[in-house]
Length: 374
Image (tube, rainbow, N blue to C red):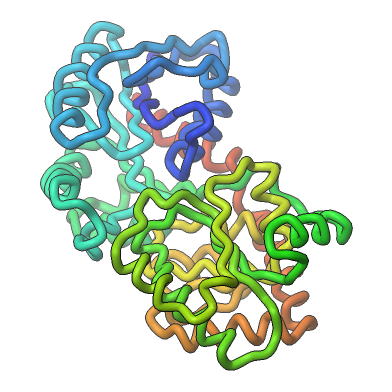
């Protein structure tokens, strides 16, 4: 079998959510199935670290697809030509974008449909593309893979896709996440928070991550509780919108907020494992990988009671209303002040983390490919 794969999000030193999903699942599949050929389609020069095995043939095609107009050219013209040239049996797209003109059976990984629920969080031209094309991609696909039962339900309800052709492949979590010693925790706190305890947020600073609510919650927490705890924000400011900036500037305790920017996996684990708790209070997630990363790092988790997050966290986290900053603040106080409660969350999280494995993710994707190739 010859499997063509959209690998445009495999970017050296710039892997984020979908990029890591692609990296971890494709690495396992290509190595596990040496009898099959994989055509990796890039939109720019690639790094050799992404050519996982001898059965991978990398192809670079123009243009670099990072704008709706360029998406259309890349997928409808360039990708279609490559699929025909290499006589692909299946086309797998790990970011959900498909070619509508190809006749090659296609599999789309639709991680979530957040743009259908929160359209104001996206630039208008990107929103137009998503709203117009993604329903078409969903109907074009021979099979769809998504990362949670919640997202599967959304795809079924919003796009009318039969549940029987939607497979759920939960995200995994890398082995880079594990608990650290008390000595390391002291070092981390000295480096980032002048030795003080802290809560941590991990993720792109996107509107749906609810930084506005988190900043309000932290301010309320500081106003109503004694102590010197800080809030550490890990992630790039790519989506640093006016509402997020205003919420930060309006804080009374903004001096206690520490921005680290993007961190390496090693440093991220150290920061995550040394925190009082992860405060991951998004108002929309298709999965929420940092929740499981925190479980593996043996850090307590505070997360939202909406979309996929209760499915991922189950009873191993404090579930809060992301639209009520006082509810978030109350959870922060409870986790910080009640060590026995915090430790019980950590123990539940350790067990919960065992359910999420990139090996399982890759296996579900491979089974989807086999269903399409029959």
